[in-house]
Image (cartoon, rainbow, N blue to C red):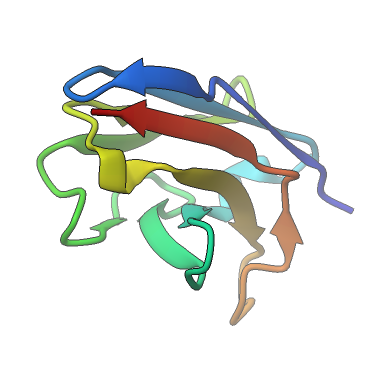
Length: 119
């Protein structure tokens, strides 16, 4: 069983920054691929960024490339999402998710943390 807990959300103005943190449980955290997703009101959930277990393979949605950075610290069982130059369209609930080695889907999800960007 993997448990995920997000923190670091909040309210900022356009151009501001936030760092989201996802604390994970599980003895084999370093084997999990980790992802950040977001869902805005009335919209479908979308993938924002992802990182492989080794940390060498990264994915970013086109909308956040150059502004967001995903990273992980396997010693702390933690994944980060540094978000810079935030825009109102980044407003959403952000979720952390884990995909176990060999898994096809992200099977474990956190509760989410709200990010609100005002103009």
